[in-house]
Length: 421
Figure 1 (spheres, rainbow, N blue to C red):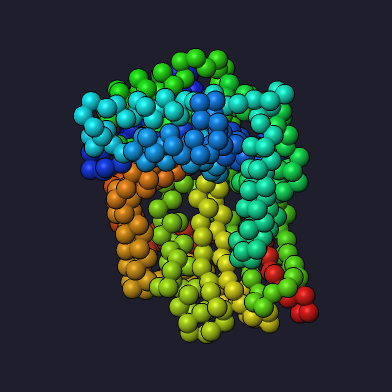
Figure 2 (figure 1 turned 120 degrees about the horizontal axis):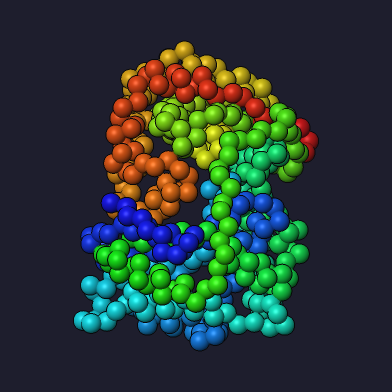
């Protein structure tokens, strides 16, 4: 069960007390309104913090400190949740019950987390230049890796176009030119503002009682001078003007991405039905898109649909021959129309429902999966724990799926084709 307490104004602790695991997990996330001016810096900050603190000034000594904590691990967090971006650290450590008797492992780990967050080395009013420049290079590599994955790049270009008027069009790691422009001084100044103004979400999964974790979080932030600002509410999607994009590049296979909009988001009562519809429509090898367009008609090499529930966007992505674009577009719309008419077989519905429920059943299998699920639930606003989520999926009727399909409206497309095509 998820418990919640507000430790200080704007600092929220949520705990899942569970004694089944040998390890516990804790995420600490500063929540920011998503905007291009901050995106690159927010994504950069946690990686810079993990380069060194005053008591462990380099990666080797940080690794040694973590080894002393029975092989604990700390990793950066940079996530998107609708109109919000989160930045922070994720801690995984052995549960206290398996440490030497009397050793307060969680307390030691939280003390080290405090050093990483607040006891960073400075130079000339900024973070250490070598830390910042090294992590800027890593972040640019990650941005370029998305370009090299042409399916991901096609989807990103389509989202940018659909969401030109919306914060959801801002890339999670920022644009390359924004990363290149970051200075050590500007980054530290932004981090200080982030520490002072941001709402904070801390989510713990492990055997420790919520009261004990509340005390540790209170100690963690006791010396922070904060004036937290309220977060703007998650908003509905502000769609831009529809467009069909086409880019030419060196490719052996075309990439087609089709975007659809729906008013149904994770906060909507119709969310489980929309989630199930997307599974029926293009979830996996049992879906309509895969079985009809790939298997029966051999019109594509790969095809599937994804649902961005925070904003109400459904993307269909396909790998196709360059000359099949028009035919594939037509068939995708044909399969959506079939869903609107209620032409969903019992086999399709059963397979899609079983796939989603199987994924939910795996959530309690690890602290990391529980942290990821509940963090998404809290930030996305669905309000469904895994058990309630399962019951909601089981209650979805064929009529609910028809209504969900009716709410989907085609918006824009993006097609990547070869330079000579």
